[in-house]
Amino acid sequence: MNLTRKSFLELAALAALAGRRGFCADGCKCSVYKGIPIGVITYSYRSMKPGAGKTLEYVLGSNLSTIELMSNDVEIDAGAPMNKLSWKMSKQDKAALAAWRLTADIKRFEEVRAKYAAAGVSVHIVKFGDIGSKGLSDAEMDYRFKVARAMGADTITREIPDPKNIPGWWEAEGKRLAAFAEKWGVNVAFHNHLQINATTYDGPLLGYSKRFMINYDIGHFTAANDTDPLDMVRKYHDRIVSIHLKDRCTKANGQKNLPFGEGNTPLNGLFALMLKEGWKFPCDIELEYKIPEGSDAVKEVGICNAYCRKGIGA
Image (cartoon, rainbow, N blue to C red):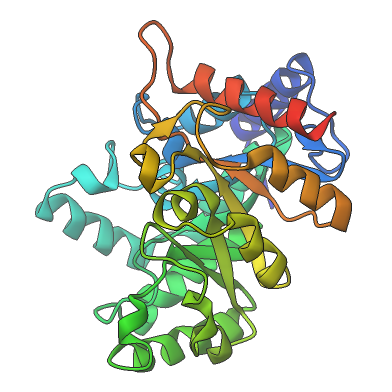
C-alpha cells in the first residue's frame, strides 16, 4: 500500500500513542490475558461522539487491543457520507450511503486498517447486521465481504434468524449467504439476543456451511434461560468464534443489565472454563448497563476490561 506523507505521519503518531499507552507491537497482544483475547464491540461507544478516528481513540482509551468493529464506525473512517449512528439515519441518508458503498474504494479501508494496526489494535470481526438480507444485491453482498477482508477480519456478524423460519422461508437466504461466505473465505457468525435456548443451534443452520459460526452472547442467554450458559460453550466451542461479555440477571431477578460482577452471568466461570480447556476465542465487552453519572463509555469499558483481566488472573 502506497502511503502519502500525511498518512505516514498519521501512522507514526498512532504508533507513538500506542507505545505511550503500553501497547505492544508483536501481534497486538496487550489485552490478551493468559491467551484469552479481551476486546470490545464498538457498539459499546454509541453514546460517544462519532467521527473519523474517534472509535480508535475510544478503544485505546479503554486499554484494549482487539475489536469487533461496527460497519458504521469503519465506514465513517473510510469517508462514507455519514456522521451519525446508522440506526439514526434518515431514509435519504441511508440511500446516499448505499450509493457510496457501490463505488467505494476498498483501498480506503486498507488505510483505515493500517491506522488501527499502527496503534496496536486488531480487527477480528466486522459487523454488518444486514448481511444475508433478501433485498441485498450480489454487489452489495460482495462489498460487505470485501470490507471485512480489507480490515483483516475473518468474520462478519449478524443476528441469528428466527429458529421458527429454519427450515422455512429463510433457508434460501441462508444458502445464498453461505455461498458468499465460502466464495470470500470469511465466516458469518450469528449473534443472539433473548431468542436463544439450549437447542437453538441443533437445527440445520450451522449445517448450511462450514463458514457459519456462533457469536455467543452469554449475558443474553443468562437472561433468557434457566440452564447453565456455560453448557453452550462446552457444546459448541468448535463453532464459537467470539463471545459477547455482559452481566445480565436471570428472569427471576428481572433480566437487568448490570456492571460486571453484579449480575448473574458467570463471567469468571467462563474464563476459568476457557483456561482449563485451552479455548482462546475472543471475548468482546458489550457495554449495555446504564453509565453512571460522571463517567462515560470509554471509562466503563476500561473498568469492564480490568474486571476481566482480574477474573482471568493476569
